[in-house]
Length: 183
Image 1: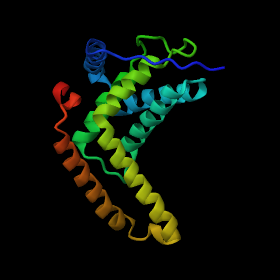
Image 2 (image 1 turned 90 degrees about the horizontal axis):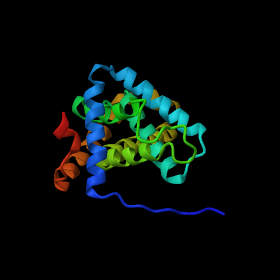
Image 3 (image 1 turned 180 degrees about the horizontal axis):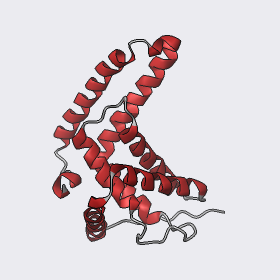
């Protein structure tokens, strides 16, 4: 028999997590992008090996997608967007967090909360990347071996269109971007 537990984080709780993110970002200035990505991947791999609650598992998959987006050369992420994602991934390179990861069931709950905060800020970026991946997979299946011919040409138009749409959506949400305030 399973049990479902719901909880709500207050503005003060969220402020605490954001201050932790700020502190981690400050500490991470000496790390290279490769080190940050490597440590974030290590966390994802460790999480995949663990028995995780669904809340954590779904967020872990989104963290993995953010890592993929930064590394996907065909996505050609602009530097400002890459910087925001790298700042968010920096938190996951910090070995010390609120709940030690080796605590059964609860060890990754603080990481999942932080991933959720990151996703609130980067949801449009992640959605755009997933849309691009979907287009690319569909075109590769449709074109078969011909997908390699003039590949950059057929990717460029859609990539540009998806990014334009993402930026329009971002400007209409008028959401205060967390990472733009701390960069």
